[in-house]
Image: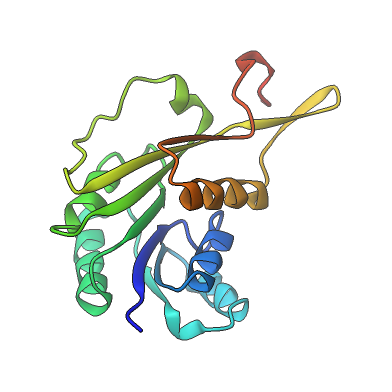
Length: 182
């Protein structure tokens, strides 16, 4: 059986459950992370570790990121699904990830912070073969207070967005904005 290839940036941390779910769904999953110990912790949680591989790189280092992503594509084929959680301190990371993919149509799920919902459009060009999806992370109202989402809630929202291929998903809520946790 020829498995589809998924890339998960943030796949050993906040999106670890997304990485595990994609393996269970039949993907070969490549995760990008900086720390080997988090990857090894993730491996302990998986039934089929041969379908999970890692790229240890800081995504701020876009030249290294591009090289390592290209190697992952050579090994497992072009990506069918890309899920990214990239901090705004690395504005070149998303375009670098998108530029690794060359011919195959793929789904790109861009996980974004809550304030990004109220900002202008992306400052990067989306390739023609990319089906671009946005997943905004909001907050939860619990009784008379609010809190940020847990990793589990985030992962459930991202998995739901992937499953339904929604163009835009809000996990939790973003309104009223003045109620967000400080």
